[in-house]
Image 1 (spheres, rainbow, N blue to C red):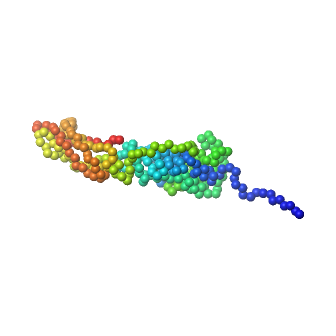
Image 2: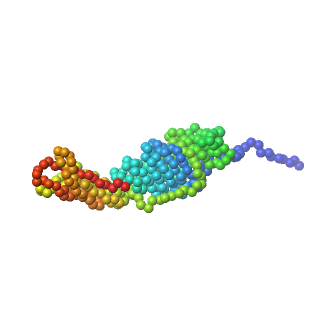
Image 3: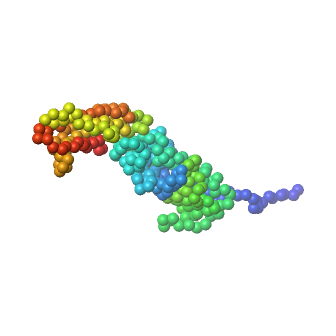
Length: 305
């Protein structure tokens, strides 16, 4: 009887340490993570400091073109605050009010950055099979760098598989509309602190937009003049809505020679739907019995906060 012994020799053995796949999965499956760095969305560069969790919620700041936007995403709605950013997108100012505007690029960027599983799949596909590992150093931390021609993922050497940095080459997609991802990763598992606004400007509801009246050119006129003064009237169009805030017009009469203000009056503007036009007037009392040359003008007072 002959005893036979089969010894394992060579073969395909699973790697003992982290791999590109395991590190990207650790990133995708972590309860929460903070992403700090840059990303391109629809060919526009953004700086991000965003914490996201496994419920696809997010909080932090997104900056583009020098305009910072505060973000609170409860997993279903992205709320944003950034007067300079929305000053370029909307036809009325929102000041420091929170805004719900699903079509805003920042809102869509945040939604795609909360999809960590999608990012991991995209990066693994982009990396392909030509991945090598080398020693690295990120912010003073010794790392193992998983290097592909288009993707680099750094994990702490001899520690967790959770990456501390992800960097992709230009034009490499990390999601449907995001590319050139270069982020430092920290605060794994730290619960997010939310402050979801109870009141906000809703892009789909003009009843929440603050009023913002603009002058209708050529409508300023003197009316019903006598020796004791005139009425001044003009038309204005509301580019905002019926939200919080009141607007008024200060009409004034000036001496045409000196430019000095002679007298004035105030007229409130009514609540009106977006696009509505209002004709307003008030009577300016001044002495016209001695003649003279006078001109009319106005100062618009829209909400300022």
